[in-house]
Image (cartoon, rainbow, N blue to C red):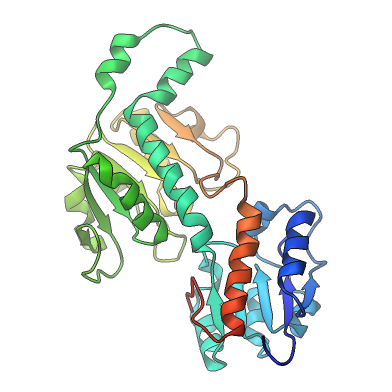
Length: 332
């Protein structure tokens, strides 16, 4: 424990029981709870929303939640920022990196909270499409026809099928572990190949070559200037008619208009999307009615104990910070 208690700022709108968990966990440290969050903003909503400027942040040594980026850059007192998200796009700027490194401050995220639920959600998507589960559910809600022969012949075994995973972060690595028992042909795409990846991994320039034979394309790309619209019409046109496209990264990484076109033309077997652009997806958006398209409302990272896990992850890192140990999920 530091000789002098630290001041910890939090602008995550957690429910009362998680706030009590946080208060107990910080011990003798001073905890400042932001009053700048709209009362209507729930914890998950805040995860995707930039924090507003808050005078309380100027008093803090540590920030937990989604602190205002301009303030994080300007406030030299801040020594560590811990985000309640796995994504950190708005903080991933040259100005932020320069400012934090100049004062030897750290930025950590919550990848360790979200890798398991997101990977399980992705695995569920793949299995559901392979076994024609959403299509059968459509019929249960529709004409209740008994299309046994049709669904049986379209059902697939994953063994021997190929999947290309876009991105190689914590979620992708956990998904690869979950896929291992199914004996699929797994390959991944990442910005910089290190050579120690668990599956054959290639840089983006090789993606087009992989898509022509891919049975499944799992997009886990984060939002960034370099990934906006990265999976464009030209790449979508390379997919074979029997392939499935999935997105649990960010909706901005895909040319959605082009995706709607190929779905409507039935040029791929279907799509399963957890993220869209915008969110919420407008009720009249053509993705809702595109053939063989299934959408979950950005729930891949959710779990019953999500907020408790976020607080626990922060508190574990706080102990490491107190003991001058390497922080988990450090990104800057």
